[in-house]
Image 1: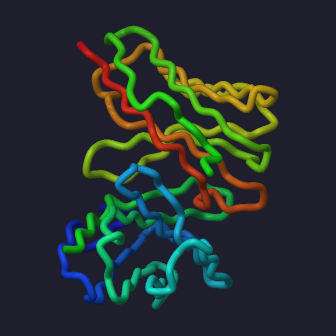
Image 2 (image 1 turned 45 degrees about the horizontal axis):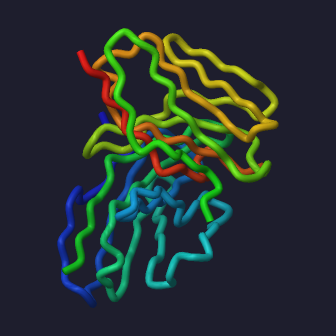
Length: 111
Length: 114
């Protein structure tokens, strides 16, 4: 009964392709996030989103876009994939002022 | 520009002894600090947090100390157990941000040997 689940766990794709990573949380949290862990192991926030506001880290290329069909889901769409997009992507959620819960991560490899 | 720094990439400790993981931050923009633990192929899991107005928070075997004047915090694990072997991330929450809007350090890999 996973609290924050992401699919797929592994994703290998060619440069130039468009791909999506799905995230779902069953905790009833108001806010969801996407983080990227790069090859240097830094975990950096990409987006935070609740039903009122999307906050985008200014360093994130506009090829990345979050889409939230409802409060329990925040999917990540990536257009025109590049080699440098290879990383582990983590979804997370939190209730306002509550601690964040993370998904298990999606390892994206662009070849 | 690293705002949260964990300068030790790894730490090895004998079972039963104390593990001390260190973290430094570069400015005073954080109102909360958190420690997360991460096993391979899993997401980070919350361990313990401390408000910037406190200097100590304890939860079982885990204690976090905050020294604001030195911009330094540390996580103490006593006694260390083999199951504690994982990567530990220190994170700061900017003022006004929700708990998931965090700035992470690079992590310290702790190995607890039986």
